[in-house]
Image (cartoon, rainbow, N blue to C red; front, side, top):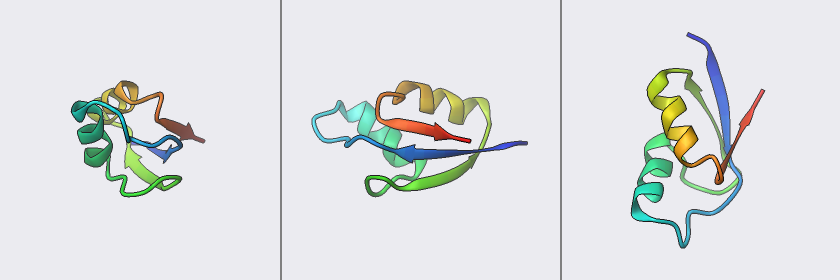
Length: 58
């Protein structure tokens, strides 16, 4: 599987509990952190749910 890099660019403060849980489940612990994940349908769905908080890097 291919990998994608995801960067958290906006804070999860004042977001719904579901969005906070998604950010945490993706593995983010602080702002501007970059993580690398497998490009599975589950991960891509999680990224889509919080697309206003994260940025997918090439």
